[in-house]
Image 1 (cartoon, one colour):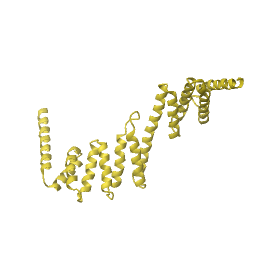
Image 2 (cartoon, helix red, strand yellow):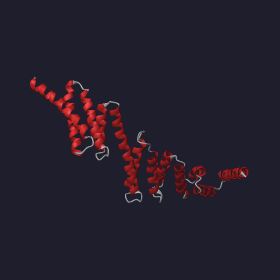
Image 3 (cartoon, helix red, strand yellow):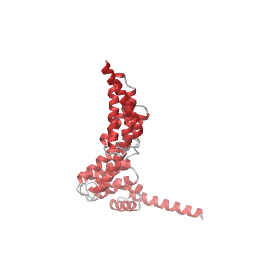
Image 4 (tube, helix red, strand yellow):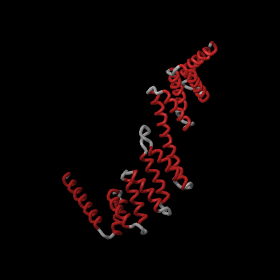
Length: 269
């Protein structure tokens, strides 16, 4: 029974390959186009891709060029080659700006970058590209059906950049690179003022600034402890009931004591 099924499958595969080979050698381009569309509709994108690759060259400058290019772009997308698909969707828009598929292709151009965007811990070049491409789509088609979805994607991508920004600042802190950590947290809060990390970012930045001040040379300590106090004030202004309040107050008291020492030294000098 199993051998019979295996044999039948083998026969079907060989038959399928034979039909495809015949189609690739067929000089009738219209028959090849019909066959390519059938492969596409059956979700056999690998075979469809090979046929459309030839057809987009053969049909260049004809009525069928547009549809062939449209199918070809989607074939590259469906085989998960997002960078290549992005190239072809963009090229489709440039080549056929008045096509009924132009808006869709413009969106897919951005969406391919979105799919190529990695987790937040990795390089975010594709993420930045995706945001730029989605914004281009919105600007070009402000009333488009996909504008709402594009804005949702942009928010997702920006959240990923926000996560990476926080992770970098926290990593600097964990590595005891306190000055770099303070700068990174400041950048996070400047670029993403409404970030969900704001409370923990302010508290960790305060700890980093305190450690940075403690390890500084004497001529720099007073200014840097004062900066620690400033961060404390920002924390309590934004989060008067902060979960970090008790620990923040200890750092505040220690910083205030250090500042007072320097002020007393000036008075007594």
